[in-house]
Length: 210
Image (tube, rainbow, N blue to C red; front, side, top):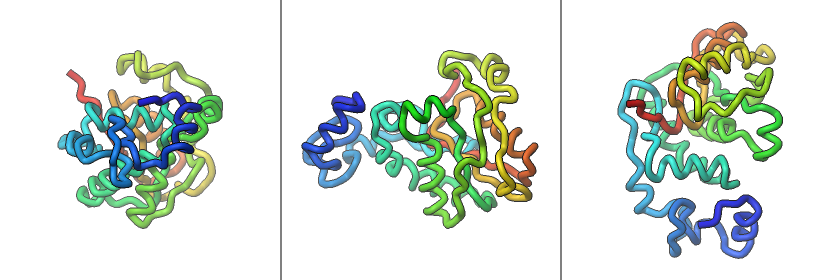
């Protein structure tokens, strides 16, 4: 399966989305973005944190392709499960925000995957989505190669709340992946400093640390 952005756009013109599985490339997908086999291989996360899936197998591949393969449409494969996880928790939230991306990375990618997820989960759950409620104050190094302590140091005071929409509100904070929790912690700090009443983090996938 080709995941280069330009090549993927070309394939989408030639072959309508849904003809091939967005993960394994199997043909004859009956209009679904992801085939039944790949969907069946997605492992539900059962820990105490609010996450829909374990970050492995097809779920991890969906996130990777959504982010780096120019397939924002794959976000819909994740969001119904995320909404179910939230509603099953009985957490009280009033509006949803996405973890922010730096301006440079957003321009390069064309979209912020956390905002895509947050917007769709908010629609399913019947709450407002507030774009731009959090902003990145400066560029940070890629977090994947850093341990928790280095992530916390690198992210310290790099995110801030913008505007008054979050003041006094119970916030649903949405991201694609949580590993050490450093990004969620920094966003939560920024929201609370900005006047939020509470913050409930929700992610598509959770990385299990050994």
